[in-house]
Length: 247
Length: 254
Image 1: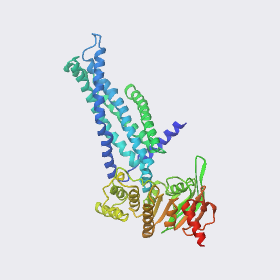
Image 2: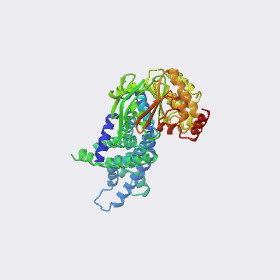
Image 3: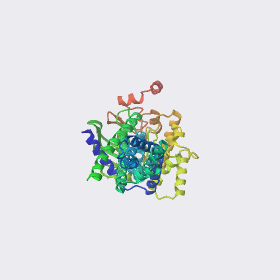
Image 4: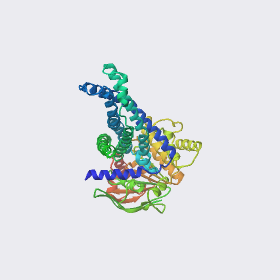
């Protein structure tokens, strides 16, 4: 019952978020700041994760290739497909749910407990629209960039790992990466990313915005935001895969 | 002038305000006083619309706030300035940006005009030249003064102050009280101050509403409160040893 109440409240919140901003100048300025905060500042962690995950995928695939019937380029192909289909959009989104989600929930939650949100409301500002819409826009703009960046680095990481381990040649790896490439998979991955980005930002904002109490409650809201957005990502991933790849 | 008519509010079935009827007068510092947990802040938050009243009406100069939708309320709220207990300054902005914020958000003033108005407001609260400080670099008293500067930036008709002296030393409290009183009289605002500080009551209480157990218990001014015969008010006014001592001295003299 409580979950249904929360979902209802979340939907009502979105209705208020998607309103016309009081001042477009403020909106664009905040969106740029958010792109920096939740997007550009996430580049290092995404780069690190992607490179090592790509390397591990390539090495694990190479180590499992015992059958002589499998062509050598299989390693490149598997690295490419697992990166594009699942690793970059989903795993990176889960990581961003931790990093960005907790940041958003604690930032908005702190504004709530220090009455900064009340101050906005008293002035006549639609606080939800003012605080959340720039974050959602920033996620829409920059999460796909992060995921494309992750795809490239992951494939690069796989190549470097194979090269260092002397398990295959550059030509064979590139042949594998290019084999059976389906451009729709990129569309699928980026569509998932947009949905995940929206879920991370809106759910985290929801938990931050409606926090009650003090600093301990802000911490709890932050944890709830990460857990809930991660669960939402996993459910959305399943639904989108059914809808886009299997129907 | 703000009129509150038959206002009631409850949380989770527990009633915290009972049929409050009161008029907050223009050009005066109207105090809402009472012990902690009696419903002072809830009343103020209902008046400004942060809480929705269960029943009752709130009229800002005959304009019925309770029946307005979000956009209509937004217009009224641009006429309201509020000083929060913890100042509630935007910590990502400098002192200057905090004061500029409502002007940039709601007026069509030019950059230069906004700067002039901001400097004027900061000067009015004796913070000239502190434009570039961030809230974390300001003392409690300074933060309150920045909060007042931000609250008066839009030339409000109504000013709300939620425990403006909490956490301040007596001397700084007097500075803040004096500032609130002077600004109220200077701009003929309807000011509502929530407090339980007797120094403030005696300093600035033009019109006082005493709330007890969520009900309007008593109404008067800083002169009449001293001689109020009501036992609840008496225990509130003479709660401290200092006030008790003053009373005994006065009685001896009498």
